[in-house]
Length: 628
Image (tube, rainbow, N blue to C red; front, side, top):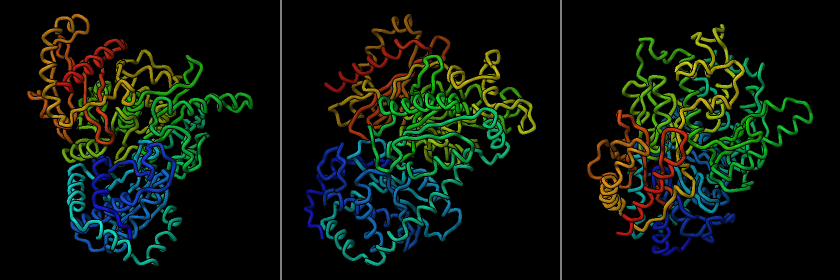
């Protein structure tokens, strides 16, 4: 038994961040967030066991099941195995059946559990526990929970689980209870869980492979045939910097190769984490170098180097991956901004719906309710894209669980919601998946490049290729050419300048713990600033009025009168021109996964001065509010 003082548990818990996106902390035993050590403290062992216990209890209560079946997996962080080792004995002692797949990507474990639910492997297939801290540094780790719908727990259920967790750890006997569960586990039952890891991993792999095909084609085999035919005429190569992530042992190479893509990768061994985990900024440079190296190598062998135009780098759990492209104008590879990646995916998937006939062409007279569900700091570029397709845009607070819940609500109201996501983080979620997935992002863009048929028998709607559909609907028909490139697709996006979420200028450290109070103080400062500068803002930027909007969970509150009502959620100041058109915004929110306060700005056009002014103005007002 671990004789862990209750105060040690409380000290660790106070440093953790618990949210719908996961329960995260620095699990590494030495407390170093960049640690590569594989051990955790005894306090974290108790917390890991307690998390498993509370989730199992939650499932028994909510599913009315005495022996729920719980699926487990982890990314490649060094501490993942030890956390799992603390959970499995607790689950078994508590009467659960545990299935452990070892290292799996987040979308993989979710597809696996979803399939089990659809197969009705009895109703005991109740949920999953996934060990990952997503994009946080390597010494961090975390715990994600989900049911059998293919995504993490909805925000309202996550709040209930967090409350249960706190209540359990407040009990005087919480440590003793977990220690007894550790000791009571049947050693044979525990060893059997580990003995089945390989077969369980194979099962998860196949479930994910099959599900990916269902997602990317949307059940439309004509589209699959059109892409494969396009690839035969115009081969396409993709590179990947796996960065030692869970995707190193997932479906990427097999799935993409089976479709006809050329594929090359680096850092392909699980746990071979070669650089910063978050797939932003400098973390994308190795993938750029790989793309350039592969193109050079293929030129030397005369083997079609120009087909390699796209690459991606996933985070550690593999549920997001941002892109690099070959830039013909610059003669080198470059990274795309997260907002660009999401915008490209939206253009592709909305064009997909038009190509298949699921979404009528704008102006045809036929009406179908369709929508995009995004998070609050997603660029208004998405609104312009959606407008071209006659599609509505709905926003939720930051957090994948919030966006997924919003999309589900919209579907219940009769909307088609094929694509959703967090533009500020890049990547996308494509229905029926309920989690971001770089495979879906890569295939979305590949469809734009390869499905080029015009009035071809393979096309169900005789509308031409996906890019031609977008050019026509966005009023750019005269710019379309049959031999278009990826650069042409990117150039066709509505112009916006948006602060990258992981730019150092987008992050603040503040002293105020009460974010509602901070926003109330900010309101008073903003109102004075607006009165002082409104004439100049109108002259320079065309801002004639503003509106405050709050985002809490799936709820958007327009015309907010008291900024503090936004609480810990997102707060946006939206600016309008003289015609009442939304043209720019400033945004703020405290992170739910890191101890930072995030800010950003978004402005229509190519003038970076507008975004820079808004961001600097925002920072100054928040700093002043933080000092009052």
